[in-house]
Image: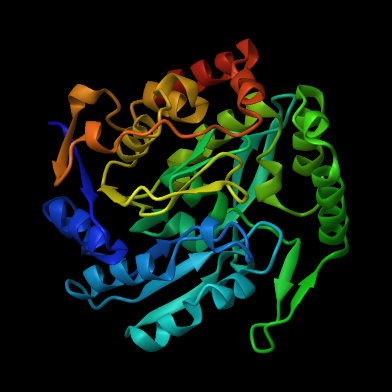
Length: 362
């Protein structure tokens, strides 16, 4: 049976998401027989609202859920370098527990860890820490923004869930005072990032510098989010490897205002006015990527997941429901300045590792 992906266009963000969920309600409602729900927005940074899941998108999901279940809902994320609580506060999330019963904000960076295995740049096993709440959740909802990306071309539902669930110890916050406290390693990485961004674009976006930046940030400090970054080929392998532990049970993509160009934090706004939703995360991500002008074969981690049979990816195996056709909303997104460098994710050694993993799955 084909997987269903809802595709809705309208002039109101909240209503778009509600309509997208209503269109696949028969798929979602059986998933609600759980004792708690995790809603994972995208809080990639604290200081750029365009890069962050809008609080009204969260409200739409909470509205829809509260019409159907009374179980506790955790709105949870873990930022990469800044403070998660600062991101909650700056983007209006702090009022959600007052607006909705049994809703709690959670910083996944402070959760009890579960050890998962990934790979370093030499394809040796590398342990990573992930949030126990996220790994053990029986209903993970990824509420993401369709964005271009500086490393993996495009970030959607799966990457949002995985990266936010991995634990970073580079910054913490006093929950009561709301004061961020960066570790000394975090301060070094912040300084290195500022130096990198100060480089002329022609140097910053060169293949050598881009690869060195990936390896530096992936191997400094106590951050499993950073440790996923082991060069362009291996990050796709790591996302594929982690997918079986942290895939979303429900993906909601808020494309009311998407991002193109130098995402995931510094790109340009795309007034797309759409929302997508599906209980097949791969079908949702591949559909959104195609609507953004990215073929599945260009996005390594999605391609590996398709080879593993993690969901529907052929257009003939996906049924679109909603109020608009793909042709009406298709737009070729401007790629990141590193787009040509990112295309170097193909690696015979990584492909052999993927084939070993696929053999084990069979």
